[in-house]
Length: 532
Image (cartoon, rainbow, N blue to C red; front, top):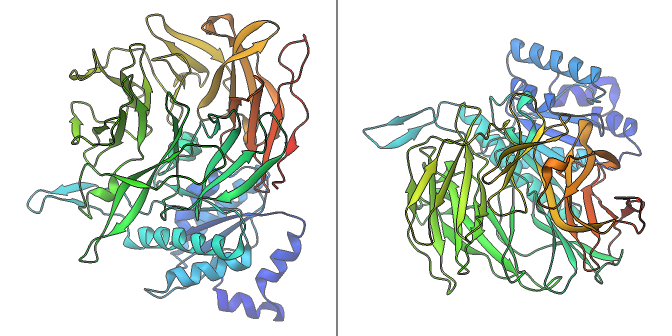
């Protein structure tokens, strides 16, 4: 492994120029930015064939680390992943990491930036000080925070989308990208607004990007538009209320008067399609502004109750769930802790059949899930640990039917749906990883059907369908002909047609609409959204 200065003198020309020449024609690549070469092994194992992958390290690391990365690069090449030359070591001095990473991003011009967790998980608790103890090397978190900041600056100055992924250190590639992510991407990122127009919302380095149909059912769109808002951490939760308004949730880092930083949940509302987003408001953190505990809060999940109240759920530092409710008049109640079961990230909030929210979460370190629910609005929360849901990590998602979840069965990886009162039903599709998105009420040959989308091998977008409320009728999956760097999304447009959306390797939105005909579920050719 060579240092940056040595590489630039090699053969009398900059090493990055050689990479850029070799990459001419690529719309954007992947940059893995980490503290040392060993930290790049796990993120690299998740890469699929596609754009060139560059590796940027803050320090050269040990010989063992460099050897491990060399083996990982060889394994990636065997999978068809192109890794550009040797890793780039920036040798950044303390306090100058952000500037050094920004220089690298300006030269590499990546579409996707992967780094590690900016807020590493604690390994123990200092009982005397009542503070979590983090044993991960401090440089890991420092580089990750610097990378998020540099990517934000680079996107704003370049005007091109940049998407950041934060990989949990120690999470094996076999878990899949979603289970390894510190800040998850939304599943329901394509939604129909009150006026019937579709909008797509995705988190980028500089904030939320939005694309919007010019007219309901039209192939003309505006965007991508960078919405005004705080400096969010990567990740987004998109929820729609009974009135059709779209609610966005995220995490942001803030500074206390004493200079210490903490993390809080924030929320904004989109009332009209294509119009300015409402102001971002703080929903707080179950640990207040404690700089050590608040930063470990999991990503929020949210659902509405029948009275219009908003319920927010967050995994807290003790790995239980904390929740609070905002009344329809905007007033927040206090945080309540749902104790008794230690959970992992990947909370799924939904509304049950009685209009009462519930939340599902994987049990930490086990292939099972627990469901918290209330018997009536305002009742006590109860944990149901007797269900048969056994999800693979990163595969839980809410289904359109009230109180129903989908997941990949840990024993076979096949997609299943948990039907209230009827147990689990297999939907097939054991290839690929991650969750399944779906939308009900799609007309197919005179039947009301639920259309499903998921990620297959190498990011392929796979589509299937079953009769509404009858998943036991079976699902036939087919390749829709595009790949996506985010989980594919599906919605029903203002004309009643199913619309599938993906984000290509070039960072551009692509959609396909359900076509007319009596031959089943047929889609029109893909359209690249150019924006107007």
